[in-house]
Length: 209
Image (tube, rainbow, N blue to C red; front, side):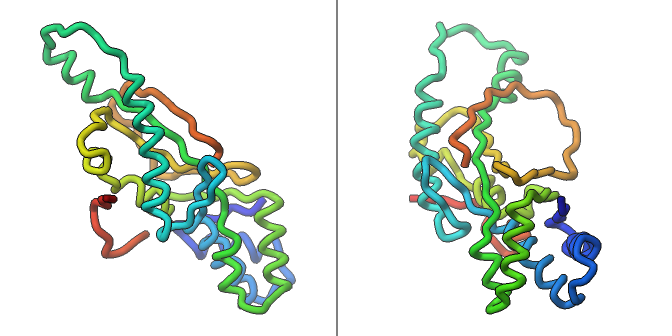
């Protein structure tokens, strides 16, 4: 299994050269770059529909909003009580986590290989045979985008629960998020949706009308 570090493309090149020593250095570099692109621009799959980053941000946001509305409606109704500071702090820490599946984007990656059918075959074999993507949240296009959707605005203020969307690789692809540090424990309700890349000079918040 090749380990593809989306934060350090040179490390991915080392992996390709080690696994395929007969490859020319230039060819190995092409394959390594294609692997990085396939991970950074991974496709989201939701309810049988494939969404490409960044062109389909509006579409996936609309689909997810329907799921979030269900989550909001499922919030239990409790009798009003006088809230203490501890109760308010606990409520602020509670969030709903929804996982969105990712698939390596072979079609986008193979564009880099132009007419090199031999390298396209190799790329397909690597992705199909199992690969581990190592990344930070800023490396994955969909995670970057979903983190910046203002769900309160998108839902016209109807969504009041804290939402955390987590994009994760699925199938034979292993995803390992790096740089995770321990934070103060938060209450979390996890919702798993159907199995379903650094971005400079981009807006901090994506609002979808």
